[in-house]
Length: 197
Image (cartoon, rainbow, N blue to C red; front, side, top):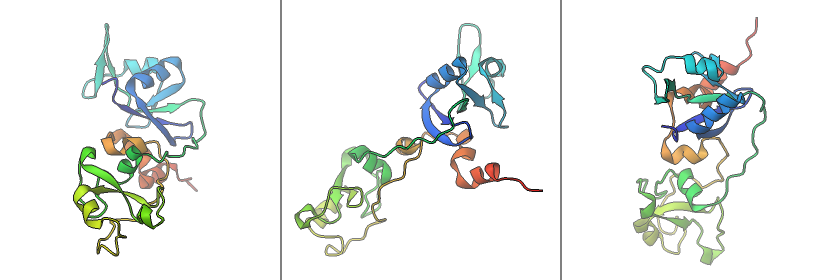
């Protein structure tokens, strides 16, 4: 439970990171963050530990059970990190959701490989916009040809993904319902739009 995921928001309630529950408790205890419940109330460590852990994920300590925070807001940090997503096999699999971009079937990572849309033998580059996940049969069928020449179609054009705090967690499906108001654009807009008279 201590290694499960907790969403971290900056001071203006924008998601900036996903951390472990262990780290979230450390931030709460140090006063660097506040926990948020389903009614959007803020709690410091003492008030959070006084909440009932019944009907919620919890951890046991010597003297009591503590409710697990799923969302914390930092008390002093109001920036958005300027992260660039590294071009790596893991991140390509995450971008393509472990799905062959030709046949559309999901595979384990061990059964996927990477395919150059425009083959390297034809001047294709090893970059975000030319590399996709492919299953072995589709990759062999395509060979050293372009998708058009092989009469194959891409599910979607490969692009460099935009950084989000949950990008690394996409493939793990580690979302919790408490995160939804902060990650869904529609719900975030509902909570963050300026109200007028």
